Amino acid sequence: MSPNPADNRSLWGIAWMSFFWSTATVMVFTLLPTFLTEVLGASKTKLGMIEGVAVFLAFLAKVFSGVLSDYWKSRKPLILVGTFLSIVVKSMFAVAASISWIFLARSIDRFSKGVRSAPTDALIADLSPQHKEGSSYGLRYMLYTLGAVFGGGIAALLMHLSPHNYRLVFWLSIIPAAVAFLILYFVVKPPAEETEIKQRPWHWRDAKYLPPIFWKLLGVSFLLMLARFSEAFLTLRAKDLGWSIQMLPLLMVAYDIVNAGISLPIGRLADKYNRHKLLLTGILVLTVTNLVIISIHAPAGIFVGMLLAGLHMGMTQGLIAALIAETTLPHLRGTAFAFYYLTSGTAVLIGNSVAGYLSDMMGGAVGAFWGGAVFTVLAAIYLMKVMREPSMQVSR
Image 1 (cartoon, rainbow, N blue to C red):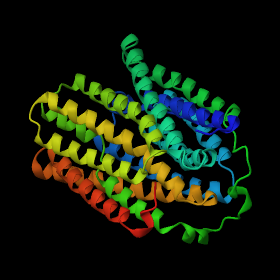
Image 2: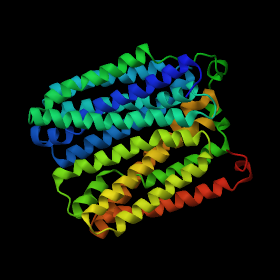
Image 3: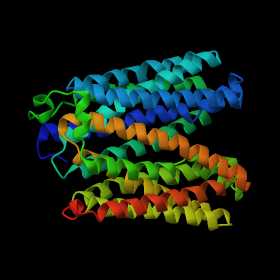
């Protein structure tokens, strides 16, 4: 965190803003698939099409918003636009009476998330002192994940008190979205001191100034993201092992709690010790996770696998962002995160396709984790190669 009180207040503001973003989002999207299929009568094919277009728009928006935040030399306006759109779209879900209306709302919602994501990550780096990025990103991801747990709990409680009243939950999700907007508007401010962002003009050719280590880290991240297929495969594996559908949400709660609990401690460690070694440890944890899930045959085993998966996410998510921030010139941070989101999105789409193919080929969700094990080993090998390079020997 920053020793400057104004910057420190802004970093806390971003963290709590992320909490309420996540709360609002999860309140809607834990229920949206069921709402689409049971209330509006959408087929699984239409559900998949809606999700696919939404994911594409989110990644597209992340790329352009990151670059624009560097070009305009201002992060906050784009974050405000994305946050305001997320408020508007919650009411669209609440009044939706057709699949087409949900398709439009879902697309706008993912676009709004994309608009705010890369500038937010870049702003955290702008506000954080050098070598303190790990704590800042760790705090942000901890509260973001806790927001998901909180939002899921609220949605479950509301549906228990008023069964099948999806629209009530959608309307109430506007409240945390509005709180996030107010925190952003009143609490989050640009860096207190003039930075290189304001001093240097941006041009698309400046991408060549992103250092070699940045591109190598993107390579590591790409291989790792191939193994970051959807958590749906974890729940499918649990179902294969005998978990009831009603108990599956408990797995995700355990996953999110471990993820949130480890994010800040790992961020603080990353400010004191070698970040690349910590990232390598996190990748190895995912390798072990895949092997555990492959080898288990008892229902309780998947619970251990889910805890390990949450541990991996908490160890690596903020750490990768901190590594990108520390290897990038200040006036190119938005662009750097745009490239990160572009490669990550591509890898996740490929990884999910491979996971699905392997699951079908091997007759069960276990196939996805064989692919995950291979990709994590490749990511670990490549990262070890990068770490042995002479330029890396002076790293913390």
